[in-house]
Length: 340
Image 1 (cartoon, rainbow, N blue to C red):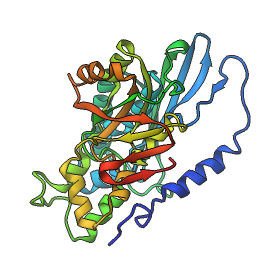
Image 2 (image 1 turned 120 degrees about the vertical axis):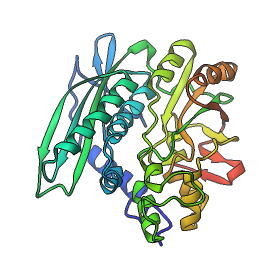
Image 3 (image 1 turned 120 degrees about the horizontal axis):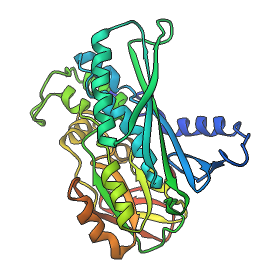
Image 4 (image 1 turned 180 degrees about the horizontal axis):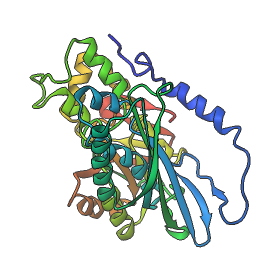
């Protein structure tokens, strides 16, 4: 049985090298209106637009679509599609405005299309954005089954942008609970389950619902609570905890150390998958969110108030502190990651 994301077919480090190889060729820069603003480690692209930056980011639902197709239940994956981009966008304090989707299919299926629309509409409500169009592509020689992706547009006033540059030693790290596995690490999860001879419709005694229902739990969208927090408090940096797990914290600012002293409690699905494959904590916390869906850094004086404000709608708590050094460490778990 596979024990790592790499063995399942997804090598995070190799993916990073491929991204750097691609980006190294993207040398052209427009000048003036529409010029890009580069922020190391940023979760979203920024474009100069006068007193504002426009924000653009794109992502897909990933192999969660395979689970949806196996269960013939596609009415929530649209939420995941929007969440993946909208949650990235708010990391700089940008407000999502609009979204376009790209739905590629091997063959036509009116019911699948209807259910995809249900999820996209719900995701739009949760992220408070407009669905302004998209593309429906039939690609029988390219796509097996379905693929769902999309691009989000937003904006942030330049003097309100959250860049992470003013994060300092002594700041607090606030964690927001995830809703479960979200849309990362599904390749490993599926192979662990199938390798153990467990069906997606089975309900293991460790869980109170089927494996399929656990894996299809929609990604939590943090737009409303985060934008409210940015308006009310001095938020210095933010990270969407997706692929890479705790390593995402380093993207906020890489010249300090993020010490996670009180990790969020992982949902039972993570413990089930870990036990199923005998997977080490180091692998789990760099593949899955492990209960931590989103993180932000603020001054220690603002930490309790920030937690109280966000906690009205999403479980949140102070999970650690910024210290001298680099990387991210979780002492209670005996974990350390030196790079994203």
